Image 1 (cartoon, one colour):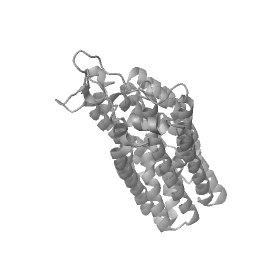
Image 2: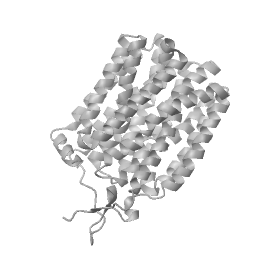
Image 3: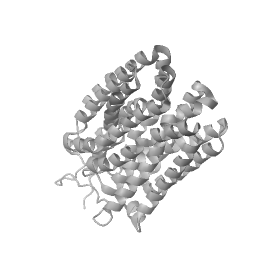
Length: 419
C-alpha cells in the first residue's frame, strides 16, 4: 500500500490544538482539582467551617462532574469541542467566583456543582476527546503534552491562587481568578478549536497527506474486539477509579495534611513541588509513551504511589512527607494521563469521546468520594494516618486490576500497535 506523504509546508494544525489544550488544562487543574485544596484550607481558616462540611461540598463537585462525563464525550463527538468547552469555561468561572461569596456551608453546594460542570468539560475527558481525532502515531505523546498543562496549574496556578487570596481576600481573590479564566480561555477556545479533525483540512492523522488518488486513511485497527472489549474497558475503569479516588482525595487534603509540619507557606511550596514532580513525570512520559505497554506502565506507577502513601502513614515526619509527596506527585502526571491513553490505544479514535466518557463516568463517580473519605477518616480519628493506610490499599488494588485486565497476549498486541 502506498504510504501517505508527510505535510511539511506548515506545522500540523493538530499541534496547535495540543497547545490550546495545554493552556486549558492549566486553568482547569489550578481552579478545579488543585484549587479544591486551596478552597478547603481558605474556607476553614476564614469561615471556621468543619473540614468534613467543606469536603462533602467538594465531593459534590466530583459527583456532578461524573454525572455529565459521558454527555461531554458524546457532545464533543457530535458537535465538536468549541461549544462544549466554552460552556465549561463559563460554568467553572461562575462557580469559583461564587465560592467567595458564601456565608453558610450549604451555599457551597451549588457553587461546587458549577465547578463540577466546568471541570468535566475542561479536564481529561474534554481534552482527550478534543485531541484524539488528530493523531495516530503520536496519540500518546499528543495527549500527554496537552495534559501537561495540569502540572503548570499546580506549579504556577496554585501559588498564584494562594497569593491572590492572601492579598485580596477570599471574595475578591476568587473573583479575579474566575475573570482571568474567562478572559484567557474563551478567545482561545473560539479561535483555535474551530476545526474538529484533520479530515476537515484534507489531511490524515499526524498531518500526513493522502497519497494521490487515495482517500483519507482510516485509523489503525484497535486492540479491542468483541471477545475482550468488556474486560479491557472495565479493568481499565476499575484500576483508574481506585487510583484516582485516592489521588483526588490526597490532592484535596495535601495542604491541610502538610501544614502542621511545614506551615502554610511550606505546605503551598510542597504542593508546587509535587506539581513539578508531576511535570517531570509527564516529560519522561512524552518520550516513552508511544513505545511501551502503557497498561503495565500505569500499574508500576500505582505501585510507586502505594509505597509513598505507606511511608507517610507509617513515618509521619517532615522529611518523609516531602520525599513521599514528591514520589506520589511524580505518579500524578502519569495516572491522570494514562487513563485516556490506555483507552485510545486499545479502542482507537472512533467515538473515543463516548467510549472514554463511559469509563470517566465511573472513574469520576468513584473518585468523587476521595475528599469525603479522607476528610471523614481524619475527623473521626483526629489524624490522617488511618486514611492514608486505606488509600494505600485502594491504590494497590487498582494496580492489580490493571495487571489482571491485560489478559493473555494483550501485551504483544499493544506493542505491535504502538510501533
